[in-house]
Length: 389
Length: 126
Image 1 (cartoon, rainbow over the protein chains, first blue to last red):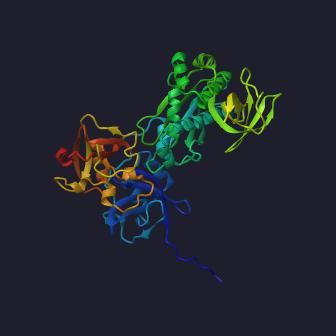
Image 2: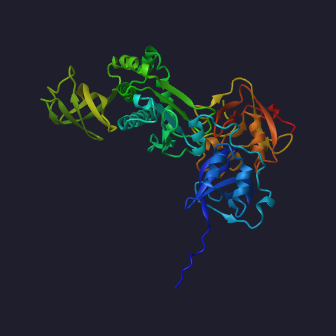
Image 3: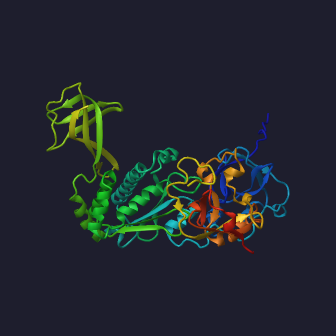
């Protein structure tokens, strides 16, 4: 017995808005099996927004995104055999059913005029070119350790450590940026894994360069949450050539971000390399660029290492004092959010006089240490002050 | 200071610039001379429509281009916008707030109620 598949209506899902004017005018979409489509708004049908949709080859779509192929050509090529209309009945976050059309696309009056290019000039810089082609935020980092001097080469440990330090710094930069947003802005943001980057070009041509892309796709505005983090990095690296200015800037950003910055600088010093980076979103006219030369790393580390509690962040806990070891200075406080544990600090208050089962307010500093080469962070709470809750 | 359209809380966003000095922007309109209909926000045109993925704040703003070239070389080439006319709008202190959004040159403008848009607008010859 032969089974024939039931007739199903092909649907697509919006993936990225490429041109906006009082609504998405041009967007790209994927079907259920990963096929690529381009959609262009046409005159409304029965009061609903409506799009002309054609399937396109991924490489031609990439060329269009980069500004090297015009929309008319892209759609004419894609619509030679099949083209569709897609009325928007339930919004662009729902699957759009495609209505196959039998007339020639060239006779339909729906084709855009020739000459529509997404960008007026092609991107010359790698980060911007990749950002446009990928329609996402892209970060390019370059290091020049001694082994990269004569050929395209980098020690495994150096590459792993570099990527790990950069990712950790981005994580803390994103957290710091979020902390300054209003509660309402925070509520509207999808923060899940927003700080994560993927390596997309592990060894770009030139000195040792790695290209990373935001792991999450940008929002419908084409903006990536990661931009918040990278703007913070730009501030910290702004005065890398001037340790005094850099010191003042970093002091303004005391906390885990500053701690991660110092650890990155120490790593660079240890591996005898500077660091250059540039990043861009698709709509940038040029990438943001910052660098720290190998010769600048040592003075920076010296300046920043002299700041006490540079990487510490204040944490206040209220709870029941119920697990402790006075000999080694370890303590536990049962708070509303769970058991929190920490240590006393040399020169700080001891646990003497605290009663098991009583409630206290602990003022602490949280510090982060990194397990060398693993990217794993160990957080420790140090008791600074205590009193009855 | 009240905006022309009812806006959600926190709108315009903090990053939107208050227009304090004269600047020219370009909007695509249907008629010459333009009418108030040409300056309706998406929300005003579609009071009950859901704009998934587009914040209510953006739906309450107006799309304009800072660069005339983008209106001509891009927007006017699209099937849905090709019959529109280029309208120059001179914004001045009291015009409201504006912010770059989406692609280069595109801005979202939130006009103040007291700003008379039509007296500051004129359709340009092709």
